Length: 145
Image (cartoon, rainbow, N blue to C red; front, top):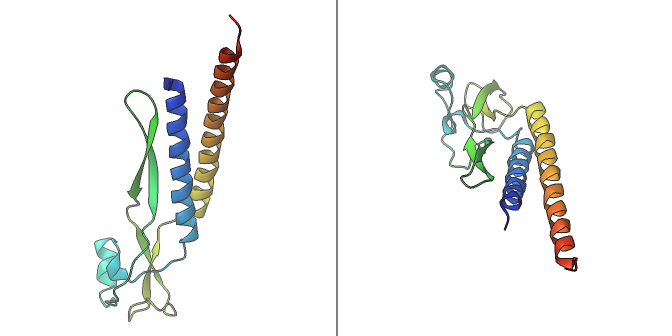
């Protein structure tokens, strides 16, 4: 495989992973969690000392960074956002502690939508590169020498 093709295919994979992570963040942006199950600042933790001990899975928002790969290409590296949550007062939430505090994921819908648009553009551009390379290879193979 030609280096440009390898770079384009790796960029397609990275863009796809970026879209997937952002879609998960958007889908789970309103998923609350008990304050003792997430990483928050010491001040917020002190304010939420009466947290529930429920044993459950907590959604942790992620972010993607594209890193250059030796030999050409890019790799998507997924990391948990820090801080992963912020504290809100919502006594009606079933996961709220006795003070009515609950943790919500640190997800900014505007940032996620802009990022999705950028990932889509990256995907489309690299797909066009793969198609063009495929067409050129086909033309070269069809040529009569």
